[in-house]
Each structure stands twice: as C-alpha cells, then as structure tokens.
Length: 441
Image (cartoon, rainbow, N blue to C red):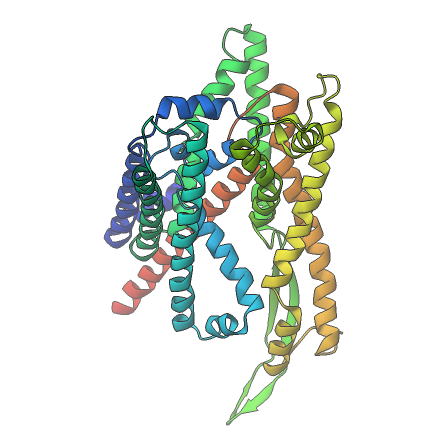
C-alpha cells in the first residue's frame, strides 16, 4: 500500500489529486475548530461528559470531535449519509426514482441533486431540534433570543451543506469517494485521544511486566479486529456462469465462462448504523427532553444503552446485557433487509437469460433466481454474524475493562473499507495512465 502511494506521487496528475484531497481535509479540520457564536462551549462539554450511554460518543466520533466542541461543522456529513440511505430505500419503493436510476449517468445526476435537497432539509431539521433542545438545557448563553437561535440553526445547516460540497469536490478532483474520505478523516482524528486514554488506563504507572502484557494484549486485539474486518470486507462467493455460443454475422461468439460475485458483507456498515441508531434514538431524545421519574422507562433506557452492557462486576446490572442480544438481532435483520432491496436475484436471472448466460445444472428463469437466493441467504447470514460480532466487541471491552474508546467496530470497518477502495482507485488510475503512455508511444 505504501509502495502504491510512493509510485503515485511520481505521476504529476495523481500527485495533484492527492494534494488537493489533503488540502480539503485540512480545511475540514480547521472548520471543526470554529465555534458557533453564542454557545457556552464549557457548559456543553460538561453536559456531554455527564451523558449516559454511547449515543453521543458514537455521533462525536463520526463528526471528528466537531459535536463535542459544538463547532459550525457539528452536524458534519451525517445528514448526507442519512439522506443517501433514504434515497436508496425510496428508489426501491418509488417507480419514478427507479426509472431515474436506470437512465444511466443522467439519472444518477438527478438522484444526486434530489439527495442534496434532502440533505439540506434533514440538516435544517436536525440543527433546529439540537439547538432548541440544548437551549432548554441552558447550554446557550443567557439572553439568547429567537433571532440568535435562528442564526445557530443557519450556521449548523450551512456547515453540513459545506461539507457535502467539499465531499463532492474531492470525488471530482481528488482521490476516492469524497464523502467516505471525509468520514474517515473525522474518525481518524479521534485516534490520538483514544490511544492516550488506553495508555493512561492500562500502561502508565504500571509495573514493567504489566505494561508489556497490557500493551501486547491491546495490539493483539486491534490487529485481530483489523484482520477480521479485512477478511469480512474481501470475502466473496462467486457463482460460475457460462454463456452459450451463438453466431453473429460470420463469427462465433460466446462460450466464455464468467462469475457473479456475491460479497460476504453485502451491506457494508449500514446494518450497524441502522441498529445503533434505532437503539440510541430513544436515549438521545430522553437526554434532551426527559427529566426522569418513570422507573419503567428508566429501565428500558438502560437496556438500550450500551454503557450498561457487560457490567458483570456490578450487582443488578448484568441483566441489561440482554440489550446486546437485541442489538445483534437488529444487525442481522438489517443486513438481510438492505441486501434484499439492493440485490434482486430475479432481475439478475432475467439479465442472464437475455445475454445467453446460465448456471451449470440450473435451468434459466425462476430456478436460477431461487438458486441465487438460497446462496445469498447463506452468504448474508455469515457476513451478518461476523458484522454483529465486530460491532459488539468494543462494547464487551468497554463493559469488562472500562476501555471506553470511540475507535469501535463500526469505525474500523469504515476505515479499512475506504482505505482499500482508495488504494484500488489509485492503482486503477496508474494502470490507465500506463496504458495511455504505451499507446502514445
């Protein structure tokens, strides 16, 4: 991988793209330090530290610390991610959007334009809810009127729209998928803090044998999770496909063998995001508007909050780990759900039939669709199980050893996936340039 970047810098065109991407990321990190005017940041930090559950920690990790500092980029690109997921779901439900998607480049541009408007709308709603909710908590400075509240809402919405624009510019003029690159740099920015916390908690002021043992265990856990994520991200089940020979003009074409790749992790990190959001949404709402008083509701919140999972040393709190079982079941469910709306075996089977392709021993049409569905269900189950395990591991370490870090399973999957995709894109651009150079000679 390092050799790829070294060789890429030798090519002027790719070097400019990498430097442009780096410049955009520097601008993002600078923007993350610009505070929203009129917000008492110390009060906000104190409020943030008193919150139970990992909902806000999860959100802060995705925003690169912008949420904790309540900067103008506090919402970051989360509205864009949410709107993209919504548009993917609506594409299946609304025939007009499905037609746009099949129109090729023009259709994708139309859907991208709609996604931008949905992003701004979501950012406006989220910033309004956040500002009004925090105002009720007393986080805004005294004497803040409604016009000042509107100014905060506009600043947060504009910050999210700006990051969306930066992401698109990186995609067009830089390296990699812009939105993914922005998300990864936000997550990576929290690594120094996480490493410092682990060092202070498990290594500093310990005996030399304990320091070595703890350090080796931490490295082994991180390395093991990285390997597991790489295997999960690269796992593919290939279904061999043969194409019948046919005569076109005076030539015999076809007869070649190909394959349909089914990724083990077909839905990426989406199931974890969906499951976490579904469980943490009541926790977030309660922190804004609920003042306590209902014993039943407090118990439900503890089941949903990952902070109470695996607290085996605390009497009476072991039962809350049952919430983790619900979390894992939700991950598996959303893995199947997202795969079902993004991969249509019947459509693939029909396309194979039209192109003269077939799976050996399987009749074209419905039998081919049922065969692929059967294989897909098994592949998704394996991928969803591994995904749920990766998502739960950080909660286990947090509960058993109080190792609270934002560098969790979700973050790791995103970082590894984006880095691998970016390296592949650089390699493909280098390959295209070599072909051009060969042809020009």
